Length: 498
Image (cartoon, rainbow, N blue to C red; front, side, top):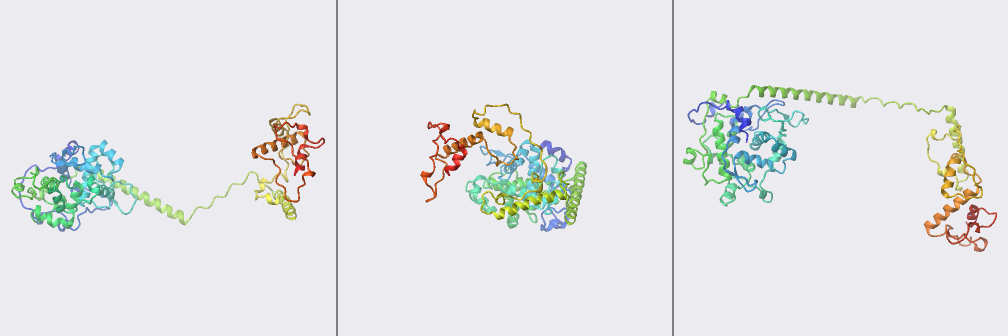
């Protein structure tokens, strides 16, 4: 799936000669001393420092994912076909419950990115990439360090950060492993295989088990010649990348498909020594220097991304310093602009004077229903203009003459009030016959809505029916408008019933 992507970039890195097979001598290795003790497996680099091909053991990853041997049962694919390791591992990541939809879409749209993501995931799977690493330069948290990966960031996809990759790997299980715990030791895996369960676990969980330090001694004694261990396959040691890739694929087939089946990744040495990995081919110092060589364009890209990271951090620090200075010296509160309708001192005094009079009047007559004190609310001085300042004169509309004996409808009366009445005038004027008729009609509407007469229930001993006339009949009862006493207004008649 990635022949076109990685074949050209790695063809010049392969050794041109095949040296004789030799045993691995740790004294000949040019690896930093910490890897010899296997105490610090993860890659150690400073922030913004690129991860080189030697750090990743890029040629080893190339040989692992470029192998086209169809030998593994893919339990997650329809029909459980036989696939190569690349398809098996990529499909396991794709079906992880922690793989986001954006990541899945990118893996489908760009197969080259899917392989790049699988390679960085495999390094996380074995512990070479720890959870303090991230691979996008705009990361702000101080808990992780940014590292460009030129050889695995040739597409425009986001490689995520190490914690997200680790979560994706942890959730890459087979369907039955969500109900029962996945096997946690090589012996448990082989027991499931011998019981006929193929595959016994997911490829991701298998690699977690093989890389577990609790099983390293047992695996080393079973499959390797001293002093080699499983994790040495992913370290910069003087063993050829191609032979280490074969040994890795041999172990994956051994535990996923069964130790008794013919292993397609074995050689004559492995067939003569059941359980042993194919012979590992040693390299001289010069031959090691020919593997995992960084091309000039990758070196330049890594420097460019490191500079971009440094610029981003500088801008971030400057922004944080500015924020600290703003908190220490907050800007002055802006003065509100002067109001366009400001009053002079004399005008404000005139506004307060009548308000004080109203309060005094209301306190002297607390029992009055019309007390202004009980209905007043704190108001802005600008809202009390009617007491002291001239109003714009109300212009009455020209109303055509009408017959004074003709009654207006409720709509006509409302329009008449709108066009002829000043809403700011005192409403305690004597009402004409049209106003009384309008009040009477409104009262009848309310009576019909309530379903009973508007007269409230009288208090005992205070109501004498003989001293008051009966209420008018409801609308539609046949009583005419002239049934009221002559010379008595209708509003006055209604008030007299109370």
